[in-house]
Image 1 (spheres, rainbow, N blue to C red):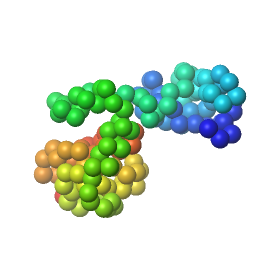
Image 2: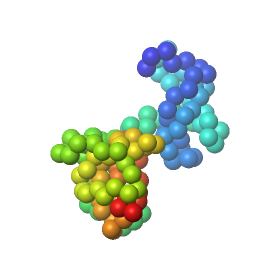
Image 3: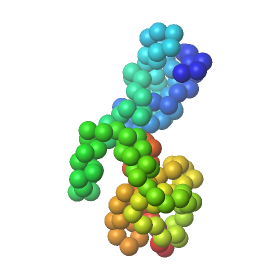
Image 4: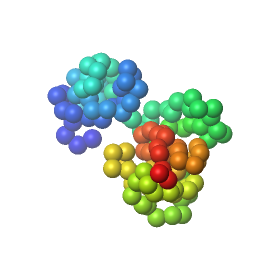
Length: 139
């Protein structure tokens, strides 16, 4: 980590918000190891948790085989595998565009993602680097 010290802003997984959010460094374990951080959203102080190493939670929508295996792999790992398996080129996300399984999209807020599941004619499940989202399409 380049130039990290007390008072600097870092990305950490928040225990209370259950998301990767901006945090302020409160303490350092060593010169290069983060100790405690404070969430800028909820104010909770906790140990630093690397967002790419936080395990994915089981899907509440019934769960596919892949969602069940997510409890053993981080979302970042699932995302990386999905991106490497995709054969299509990245395309910008639009609610009006029609996507198919395995497409790579560029979302303006969430970044690059891979279509993991077609929920119905106008809903898709997308794996982004730090989260899985349900989005609308084909409108």
